[in-house]
Amino acid sequence: MTTTGTATAHQELTDEFNPFLAMAKRFEIASDRLGLDPGLRDVLRTPDRELSVSVPVLMDDKTLKVFTGYRVQHNWVLGPCKGGIRFAPDVNLDEVRALSAWMTWKCSVVGLPFGGGKGGVICDPREMSKGELERLTRRYTASIMDILGPDRDVPAPDMNTNAQTMAWIMDTYSMHVRSTQTAVVTGKPLALGGSLGRHEATGRGVMISAREALKRLGMRPEDTKVVVQGSGNVGGIGALLMHREGYTITSLSDMYGSIHNPNGLDVPNVLEFLAEKGKLEGFPDAEAVPNAVQLELPCDVLIPAATENTITSKNVDKIKAKLIVEGANGPTTFPADSVLDERGVMVVPDILANAGGVTVSYFEWVQDRMGYFWTEEVVNSRLEQIMVKAFDEVDEVAKKHDVSLRIGSYIHAIGRVAEVYQLRGSFA
Ligand code: GLU
Image 1 (cartoon, rainbow, N blue to C red):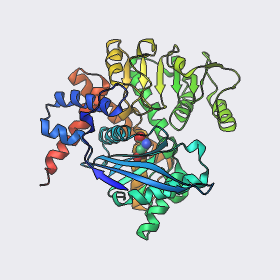
Image 2: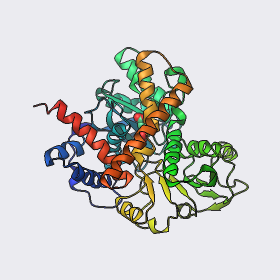
Image 3: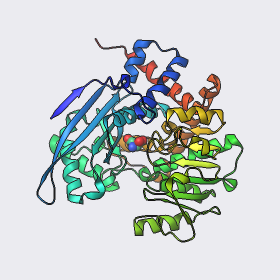
Image 4: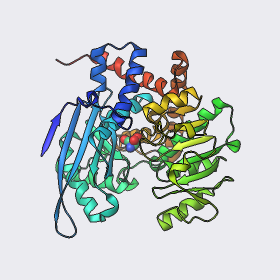
């Protein structure tokens, strides 16, 4: 069954671990600074459209199983909705709502002509075969395709989805509309209209953000110790690129545990080991550390690049880093923000720090629509320009309002969307 509706969920949320509430609290602070009127606040905070679908899938053992999927389009004032699709057992509507709103602000922070959207399917991909995942992806795509399209809503990879998932979405959509539509998703394989540099883009953006922040703190890469929570597309690639730039990466983690070497990990070897064994545990030349302890290890920079709610009121006091660069979406809870501010810890917020991925998604969409593809050097140098400009702009707004980079980024992002909304006017 398919339902559509307008969200009012932000009125009901109360707890620290609800990411939509975390987004809404920061939104209020930034809106106060911008002096936005209550009506406009309501428009910009509330998701434009929420779609919830039941997705029947024939499993390998011939049983029929029904999965639940979502696509939330938070706001399309700046352009087609843009944002990933995640497959995970704990996906829920408030999480997808928050992630879609963050996409609106993220696209705005870096100046892309996109609104924000996000999708998710409640499933455990580790327990599913490739065939089951393909059938799930195709049926989910067919169920949400009325609201997708290169000019409407353009998905991308997120947790547990990848270039192959995007290829299935592109093919399913194209088969239904009777023409090949490469620009309906980004993060595709290169052979299907993907972009060079897209796979590394989020990690590259994290590296650029860390570098810009460290410049302001007067620190050099060769004197900087970095702990990375995660080892996947964001954390693993971010760590690899930073290792190449001369940073000392002292710890990496996966869902099973963390590894630590205070003298620095050989990141290429760690990633090779991980690709071979499927987990970091047992990597020679490092000690094993429980994941909860990893965040509290001594370091200069902490890069949470796993999932939401990892820096909370429960562990924030024990964090030793001077700089936090949010590779993940929503890793810091709202109550933890003020503790970090009071302690003078600089935080490069998610909507800025991990915007490299969607920026190169934008390049991919542009290339698909032009039918003309760029070299990796062109992609990387345009990404560099956009990330540095966005960092400078956020820093300037934060200084002007005497607020953290997080609130500065919200002020910058919301101000831009509010301006465009007012110029377009409200359709009656
Ligand atoms: N899922 C990524 C994010 O959270 C990328 C989104 C995109 O490229 O559209 O930013």
